[in-house]
Length: 139
Image 1: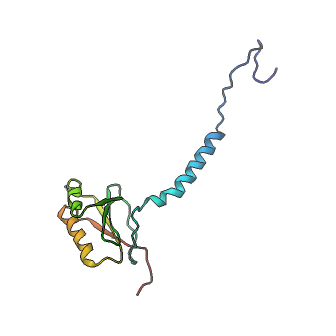
Image 2: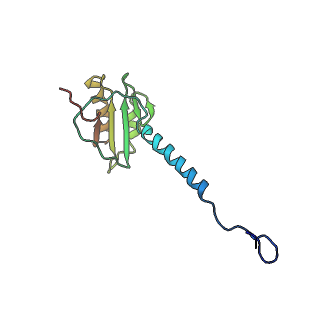
Image 3: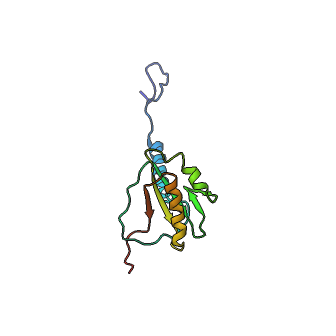
């Protein structure tokens, strides 16, 4: 009796599933996602100051606000016009405001960062975390 044939000489359908191509594709996708996931965290290039503070725990309802070296304000990856930040956050900061992470370039003056923090406060977002580089040995 030959493989794949029955008593009457007719071929029967093969019912086994070959999972090798599926495993190969899944491993390739896993490697691609492992390489690209860290690159998706911060879209606006900002030279962050150094700090000895501990790392924050990520939350699902988090808003990222960035200020680059020129003073331009970004919400997530979208650049905002001057004064637009408060309008954008007005609906999001209600009775349970989300955590806002503020990333500011180290070359900015204190007044520019405080102006953005004032806009966040006026919009009702009072939980603001300042993002810095990891611990360093700066004097």
